[in-house]
Length: 255
Length: 255
DNA sequence: CGTGACGTTGAAGAAGGTCAACCAATGTGG
DNA sequence: CCACATTGGTTGACCTTCTTCAACGTCACG
Image 1 (cartoon, rainbow over the protein chains, first blue to last red):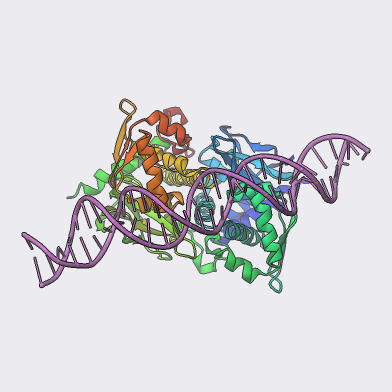
Image 2: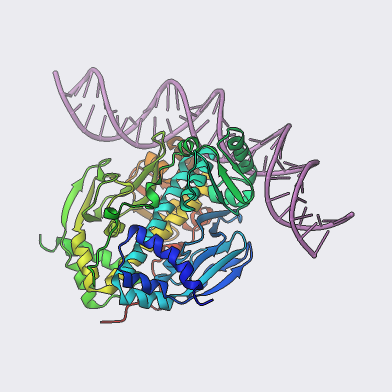
């Protein structure tokens, strides 16, 4: 299946071009990046802590979490990566992993050699710039998570997370309803929100009984987008999706 | 005072070269960046939310915080920037601010035009690379803050923050003691740790009475570095300071 | 059909928040 | 130079949220 990488890289290019301006040639350079697919079982590391990484991981299917933990082994997820995301693009500039990446469900990834990404970036400064910008969107999400975990109560936290994931999955809102696949356990949601799984369970019950959303182990159904996003104090700006064309950026002049 | 920018930019170059490899010429290019100094009073915005920024801010003196808040106006600091830090370097690739920057004490900043930074990056790919890497260190700190706020109790959180700031101030450990200037109020510490100022006060009392550290409104004295860093579960790796020369990175080949 | 992973629920307890008062230091205008 | 206001720090009493612990349910799978 020679088209396999291209097919999946297209989603990455789509993300890049949603905030950066890339010429046709530059886009094709990215589409032609090599990569080999691999499957990772749930709860297996994609990247181990302190590993020196030689590939960036494009998520093709499934979900991958970036993990850290406190001394008691209490885990905290600092990022969730879904299909189309380049999970550890930052390793292009920092090869040694400062946190582990773990598959949260059976996941298909495309390993793209950093050497190839680097030479693409070297050949096309606009690509380097777009990759940098991509990393900064990740950082903006991270900053929101600090606020979420630091200053919001459990219901609000969970609502915010569900809204964020809905937007990132580009799940369409139809008649206030949104449905998407989120293959996470309640324990994973707990690790992402800084709660216990018991409390996550109670919070989900409240959301369910309030008619806001139902979360089964694989699918999220938001029943009242308006209400849930208000509860979650959710404003999608920080995701930098769907930027108007005039808001997209390019510093490097055209070739 | 024509040497003024250079003097302060030197600290920024030092930070860059602590994880990136830059030639003499590249370093000088950064040192020769233009910039004009400005004073900002405590609690005044350096950058307003949604403002389209034309300058990056090098902190010369004082402390600046990156602020976000929940719907009730409860504030959360997502980053603290101290002298030598380029507070909003990411605005080079994302000019529109997604969070406000506010001075926490009377602060002197050096505003460096983005146009100049961009042309330096354009002329020297290694500079672009080093700036990208700098942003990724910021992001690594952010990820640690998520863990701190999400999974640690109040004492541990505060201890971790104090250790982090001590390291970033490069305050030397002398006979287990460390002292440095941290011009923050307890309310600021609360906003950084996701606690209330009342509880910050109680936690600081515990640290004081345990002989671990004293925090006055302007100076932090860590009395027992060993004990405080253990309590705070602090491991400095993520700060990427003092990398061994062979761990520093350069992708772009030498000119 | 047993075993393990995941979800659900209740009861009790702890960590931290809220409210309110008061103190000390500093600054300001008369 | 004093009256007063303001800001930041301190403390106590009470209350809420979330955690902890423990039990049990349910579904999938070997």
